[in-house]
Image 1: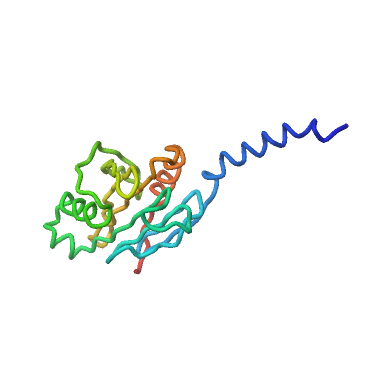
Image 2: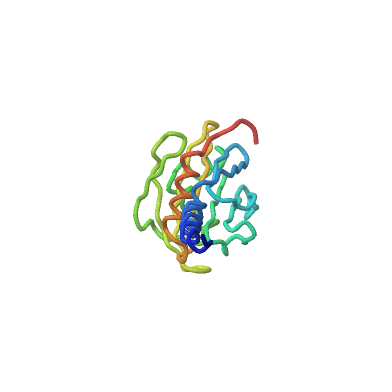
Length: 178
């Protein structure tokens, strides 16, 4: 009996495991009063501005150069008030300050955060490279909000992006403290 007889079975097993690798992990991320899980290992939250962080995949990528990013922007209750408690003003602030775009939504998208369906915006950007961005504004228990943006390099398969965004949104939770 030769080893070549089992070789195709080994290759099939390897391909099956490799194709599900990005959806089978459970990596935990925490920042301020929120936390969530990701299906792949990502970077630690890296500050990108006042009250904002980016979490990148691959982990060693810098903000703006990653294949995928989760961008979190804390919107304290005081800032909400200063912006007139208007979700549209807050979304415009987040887009122009942290996402590098002032474009209007191309379409409305929805995901489940904290057990509730939340509507968000689908945007595209060409700077620094073609990207697709989903932006959501999540109300928090303390009266503030957390803007959550999922950014995907256009070269990345949509399925991999969906696995990340779905896992993050469904596992998203609040915790006490900062």
